[in-house]
Image (tube, one colour):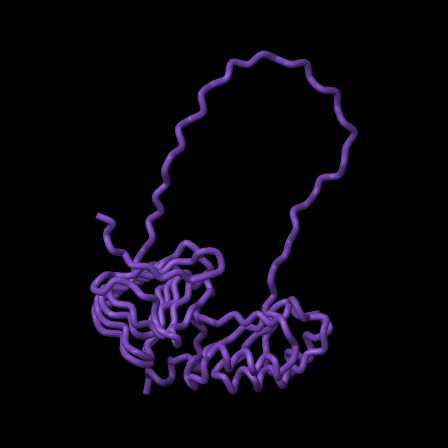
Length: 253
């Protein structure tokens, strides 16, 4: 009884929530619906109730059907929780639909006022010193280690760290890391590296059978089959420009 009396009725704790960023370049619900169907290839659980932040910067000045957009994404398994880069005039309407405003800072560097130029100083002879040799800084990145299979419906997130998994990532499972992901077993589910925007993050897997891979928000699916790679060799997945590259780690020797 004493424990129930001293327990707080509500507690607030810091929690990390991963959300999909959806960049809209068209305001038409029909066009967006067709694009989502093409993207998911009709897979009903392609987006498994993921949270989504909708970025409308490129169409912010157009008249947007907020109720239609929310319903559209919900029908494809995406739960819109916030809107980014919307016009301030739309804030009230957006909030009326239960959405938050995701504010993106776009501060510009201050420019000092122009001053009258001062006379150039007389040149002074200076003995040049050799530049110091460049130093190599090795950043210690922590890692989360998982030794058990990641089963369907499970989601593991290595916040601010690499993720190392020594067992299989099964279909329907999702593994996420702000750093790189190393899987010393088959990858059959989803793997999302560089979740906080690190474009240098990579994914390594002993066997490539993934449903989806992503690096820094750029993703690739394999409904049309996997790249032809040598058998019995681990793979490396990295970001090249705006494309995901899957390659064999077969030794060149």
